[in-house]
Amino acid sequence: MIVAFAFALQAAVPQDHWFGADKLKHFFVAAFTQSVAYTALQAAHVKHGPAMTGALAATAVVSVAKEVHDRRTTGLFSVRDLVWDAAGAGVAAVLLEHSVRRSSSDERATPNAAVSVLSPLAPGPILRPGDKPAFARRR
Image 1 (cartoon, rainbow, N blue to C red):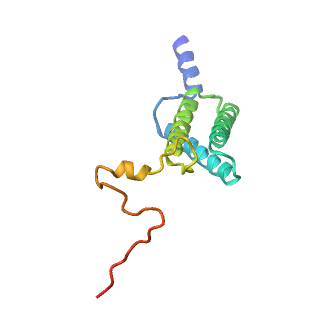
Image 2 (tube, rainbow, N blue to C red):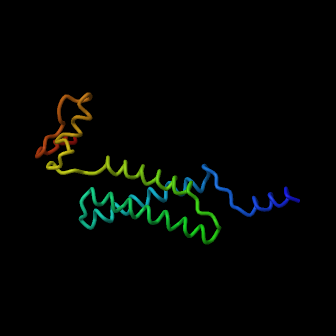
Image 3 (cartoon, rainbow, N blue to C red):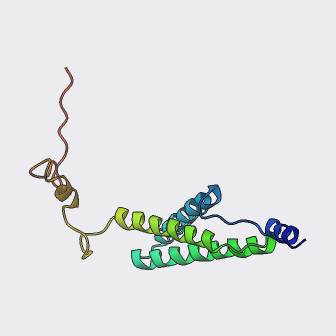
């Protein structure tokens, strides 16, 4: 009787695994939310740092709201889902940090970042600022 009751209780509580399709959805939706929120804040002329902070806050609010909704509908508030949400937001933040265009007055920007990356392949810049590309004439 006790074993049957234990199985009945276990069947009533939804299982929450660390890996699965649901966790990938949490990861990618959080990354998408982070990216869209950052882009929207940048479009509103918010500087990089505050835009990253605002995007992280928006992602956290969306993630926790989803778990509160899940708690009300399925009875499960999943901390594991929140971990995957945080991972997705973190990866998006790193990608955004490394893909942001910076002005030359920004202390973290390097004036010839592309040249320094490609310097092992080419000894100098192919085009300097102000140069126009020369096209070969067709024959």
